[in-house]
Image (cartoon, rainbow, N blue to C red; front, top):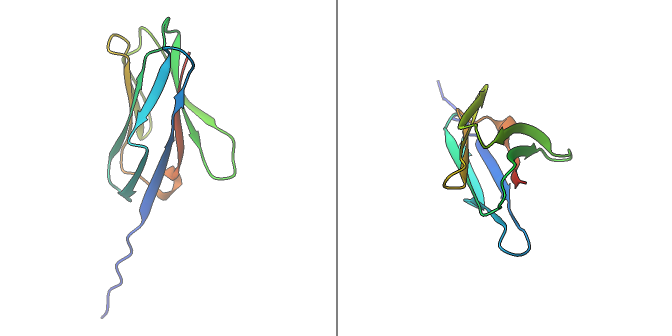
Length: 114
């Protein structure tokens, strides 16, 4: 009996923004392609000062951005299902970790710092 192997790819696009002056937000890598079921992590570094909060958004094709999380200075880690966000306000670094990527994770991910 012949078996067919189906491999699905999840494409994550990352949007980054450079704010005027010394305030900058940068996400890495600029895009990410992973196999379905594989874990992946997106990084966000910023120089925004003073820091109020950091938000991760997910924008699926044909939709507006949807908030994944809001993190403030005292937060270090938040989890919601397969999404885990970390924040180190001292080093001005955040990460978004997706466990077992699915096709529904194909989207643009946006890190916003204010």
